[in-house]
Structure formats: C-alpha cells, structure tokens
Length: 114
Image (cartoon, rainbow, N blue to C red; front, side, top):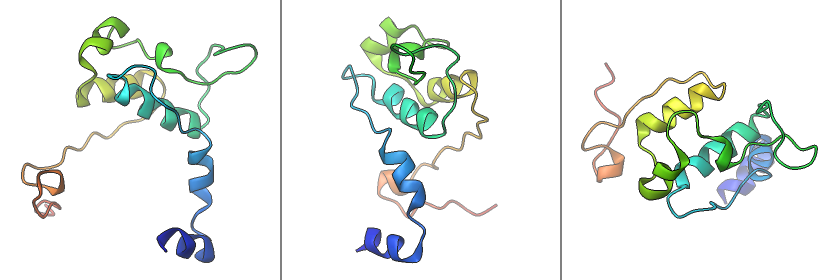
C-alpha cells in the first residue's frame, strides 16, 4: 500500500534508481561493504577504476582503504569503519548514532531534539 501510494503521488522515483543497484553480499561478513556499494553505485559515483570489462561500478573488493578485506571477512566492519570507507570513496558523511534506548533497542527513539 505504501509503495502504491508513493507511485501515485510521484515520490517513488528514487526507489527505481536504488533498486537497480541492489546486490547480494559476497561474504557473510560483507553486509556493511555491500550496503555501501549499493549507496555508492546508486549515487553514480565513479570508483576511478574498472570493475569488469569497461564497467565502472563499486564492488566489495574495491572498498579496502580503511580496513583490510581479510579483516572484514573475519569480523565485518564497525560503524566507524563504514563512515571511513564512505568518506574515502567520495561521500560527504555526517555520522549520527542512534541514542541508547532508541528504536533499534525497542525504545521510542528520536532523542531529545536538542
């Protein structure tokens, strides 16, 4: 129902750009890297090197500027690693953490508004 409503109101255009870059993670611990690849590719940022053939898309193995891929394979990435990877791949980041007791913890979220 929500998607139909967004289509009807003309606010679903951004979904189609995003969905075309969805990817399945190559390794169990690559969820953060895969998420960042989806973001970078949907924003159409140029990785500055070829992925395969003539295509220039981000893939997980290109995201090695902050944490060695061998470490990511063993432990994944932290929030701070994600921010570092996003920044060194051309994104301007504004890292905001959810307060303890926020929506992810089952709380009301939102913070104090200050």
